[in-house]
Image (tube, rainbow, N blue to C red):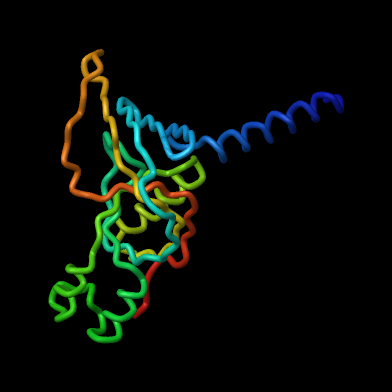
Length: 186
């Protein structure tokens, strides 16, 4: 027979584990000091600076990225929701390749490298990415700010090396994110 003390210890441990996972979950470690940030993604170490105003907007996701050895929380191809609604009104289902609106949608597609501020945000971004990979066209809103990556190092064969890359995406710090819909009905 368990004593009350054992039950209380089990409850406290369960609550501590839940808190730890909800606050720190995911593979990313992010440390922020003012506008400067440090990220750890597996073998990648990045330093970044917030370089602009904070924004709040919603987006239609039109593409995601397969998991792998990444140096960001996720990479999404998105269309601002206001633009997506205008495209839908003008062209109908602009997401089909044969649609006259497909080329116009392509012009408005942004590739965003997203860096989560904490584990909770990272898990939501991961869920959004999985929906995108399943062609569900999720819609989400986020509070975010532009970043400049100031230093990127990786551990390769036990040695730290400088990574110089042209990423092809704009990096953003995601402070809050919320999935609005799992798919867009046009």
